[in-house]
Length: 158
Image 1 (cartoon, rainbow, N blue to C red):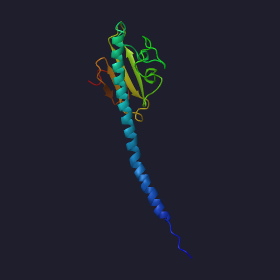
Image 2: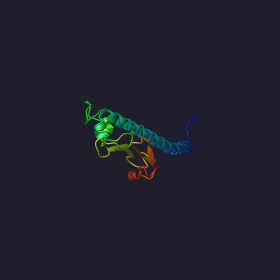
Image 3: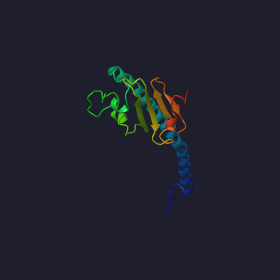
Image 4: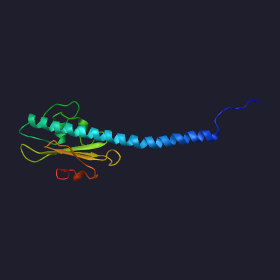
């Protein structure tokens, strides 16, 4: 009779336990790095919207700054006052999300409008991002960690 070789049940359980411990350490780090990447993308998009606002107000000086809807346009896009074709339609539609964040930009009343605000808010606070971002005509990007998008204003983070 030949002696069979192989792993015992205890040895297999030890290997599975080690794999589970490594996974328990790795998964939270993966989620944190994903949130950091989402937030970096959101800051970049806020910066793009700031630049788009300057481009729009320079191109259409009688109007000044505008809302986010006029900065984008459908594909294919024809540049004009209502659809400037400056930012990605995914961002300018407002209904879509990009990298786990939603974006909004509103111009102040007046002709020409000399003020605007930009907000980037995580879709699920604590899962897609831990900060809300805000910018305005000063082009300084501010953030809040309270989870309340309304708390991100000029006065909140000076």
